[in-house]
Length: 251
Image (cartoon, rainbow, N blue to C red; front, side, top):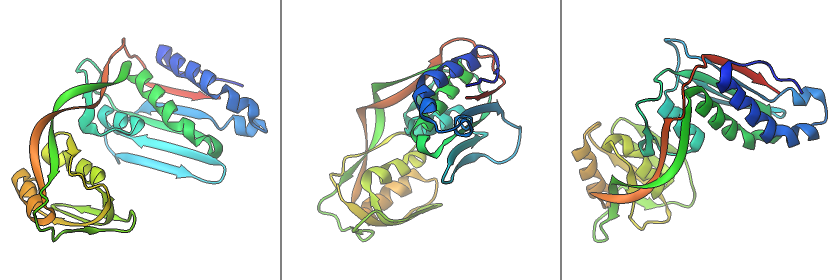
């Protein structure tokens, strides 16, 4: 097993994580070629270019590539939590990094843990999950309302989001609630009691909260209410100085 040198203490932290988390899998690898597949690479983002996430896999390997995402978006993807449930200390750097995680196909489940450790190390962040009382937007069901835009679906299907419109052939209310968080500018919690899967047709004036609330009521029979709730929050604070501008770590 070989480890390429990285950048300072941040790279060292990721190296140690790779050692402890992947040792068993490496010992079970059939040949050296497979052992060399495990890698995490982090580089400073370019000032311009595409922004996004690429998930590429084949029969032998799997790769996650994150390009020019900000820290909030990185944490949202790495921890599978809404961006609106993330609190980031202003002491953390605003710099963007590109992340690439590459593993054997049989070890896909280690990709997100590797990404989490790389993000924490590069940004010098301590990340923790906790419960907090926060202001949220509730979705509640008006049982007496007519619902022209909502009908029962047999299974999860496709969902198309556009400016001021949603078309879905099968979605759960909890997923629908999350899709409105950007429009309302806060976490949205489903308290409709509608536990099934639904076809949705919804139209409203884009970037207009009042129009969206009215459309939910008139088209889906769903009321929007502001309230306080204890919800899951991901908190990122500075754990120490971050000096890494790039690292290349491979096992």
